[in-house]
Amino acid sequence: MTVGSFSILFQYFNQLLGEVDEIFSVLFGLESFRVAKMRINKLLSIKNEVDGKKIISRIESIYVHDFDISLHRNSPLFVKKLNCTFSSPGLYIIKGKNGIGKSTFLRTLIGLYTPIKEGEVLINNENIDLINKKKLRENNISCLFQDVPLPSCTVAEYIRDKHTNSNSDQNEAFKKVFYSSQFNIKRILDRKMDELSTGELQLVKLYSAFLKEKVDCYLLDEPLANIYPELQYDTLNLLKQMAQTKLVIIISHDLQFEKIGKTIKVG
Ligand SMILES: Nc1ncnc2c1ncn2[C@@H]1O[C@H](COP(=O)(O)OP(=O)(O)OP(=O)(O)O)[C@@H](O)[C@H]1O
Ligand SMILES: [Mg+2]
Image 1 (tube, helix red, strand yellow):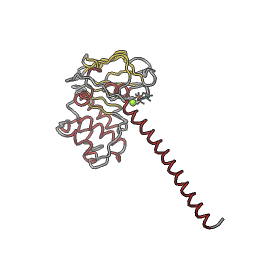
Image 2 (tube, helix red, strand yellow; image 1 turned 45 degrees about the vertical axis):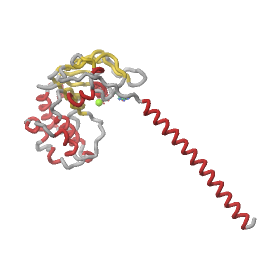
Image 3 (cartoon, helix red, strand yellow; image 1 turned 90 degrees about the vertical axis):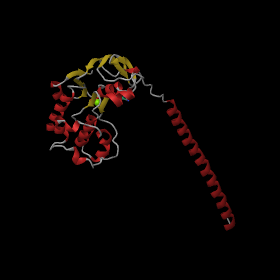
Image 4 (tube, protein in one colour; image 1 turned 120 degrees about the horizontal axis):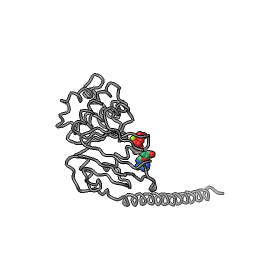
């Protein structure tokens, strides 16, 4: 083969490769278009959360009757349908085995999770489906959940909004937990939330939940988790005090709670 014919052949070969390359990029383009279309269709098929209209001024009672939740293909979550009543003021401890559905129950109660439900839940004798859960979460309830993604900000930024107009700082039982020698929130205000120890983080989340003090109900999922024993004792006292005027519902495996509240068994 002469040098001339080799260079012509080489040129055509390169051209051919270029075309093949283009065909592949069109195919890849088509595939990503197909995936994007599928995702858009999936997003469009998500139904808007249907929230109720009724506004609750103060939570007086929560009545749960033959309640169950369906998670996968209509199989019920609870081993036994849930029947219980929470009356304000009062301290209630929800107990039950791991994975029995305690956290899912509380999330469903306040509309953070909207699975298929069975039975009925009434707040002040109103069906929860008719109650505006967004307003309920804003005005009536303060929550502490374990598995909430953390914002990348400092402790001061995390608590700033809630701290305004709070009188909790003057409360002795509150000070014993959050301004003590074991833990003082003031010392960690400049620290990043995602750099705190698990115990520190838990106390900041608790602090933040308690600062929302205009509410009439506290839902606390494992409030004592990772807290130093002496502080646990002070936190129990604070919760006992809060439950004298408000409804405090706690999920806990901790036996200490059994002495100070009414137990609700799930499962
Ligand atoms: N969105 C969901 N989709 C499918 N399954 C879920 C969903 N949320 C929770 N589950 C399942 O429901 C069951 C109950 O979970 P839940 O977190 O309520 O249990 P729990 O009683 O709070 O347990 P623990 O004491 O370990 O915190 C678990 O098996 C969990 O995997
Ligand atoms: Mg849980």
